[in-house]
Amino acid sequence: MRLRKLALLLAVVGLVCLPAPVYLPALAEATSPPPQTSQSYRAETVSLANQSDVETIVSRHGRTVSISVHQVSHRYSAGEYRAPNETREALATAMRNGTARTTAAGAQADLRAIARNNTFVHEAYGDREQYYRLSVEENGSLVTARNVTLQRVANTTVERGAYSYERLSPEARETVDRILRNSSGDDFGYRPRVNDAFVDRFPALVEKEGTLHSITAYVHVDGFGVGGAFVVGLGVAGVGAVLILVGGVVYAVARWRE
Image (tube, rainbow, N blue to C red; front, side, top):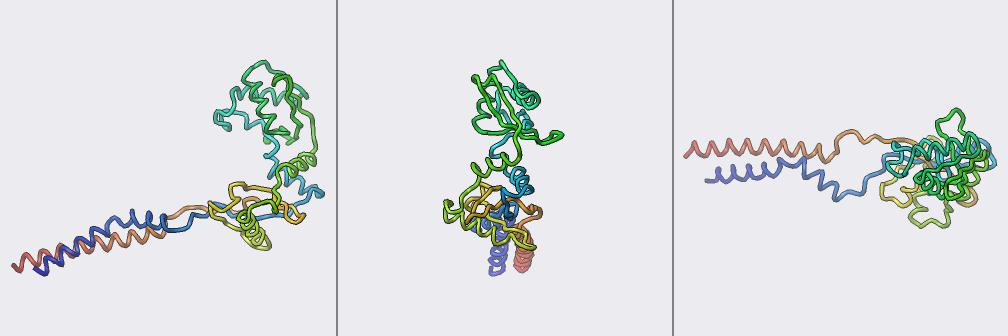
């Protein structure tokens, strides 16, 4: 009788252990801190007085005030524009000729929206990445594009897109400070957690105590491989299988003795 009870106990414990690869990772996820981002970030000091820094500011952060015409398409905008082909053609023509007109109502609505959200337009994949001051008039039917320097684009980017460190929340300042502390020498930057304050604003320009910092992704961290909880779960499941097997043997011995 005791052997049968032992066999039953072994079988029950074994059955509990078998699904461990499923419930251990779920338990670990529920009790562990939020995961880290897939990238680490570093901060670089930049200045509007330095030409190379001007180029850096525009290339990394210019999207806050400028749009590339290649984005106005079904492929990149996912239905954001009513008439992407006509809108893109109007922008491209204005960049070539200085002005362009369109009679398509959808394109006019698109152009008005683009002008509200962007000061400049450019072609990121053209022979030369020239920026143009964008102007939309006559209810969207007239588009004007005038050449501007990278300096002007950078100035506008900093003026409208840079964050003041002093105005950030304490949590956001802590995230920025951690990046600044890990942005010198051979440091690989700081890898924040996905729910850390200010992470959703990256890449970002932050002005702290009169110094402008460009925060961008530095290293991408691949998420390949299985989690430690899953590996442990496999081991526990293996133990469970052994316990069930041993329980079966013990039960057979008990039956044979009877």
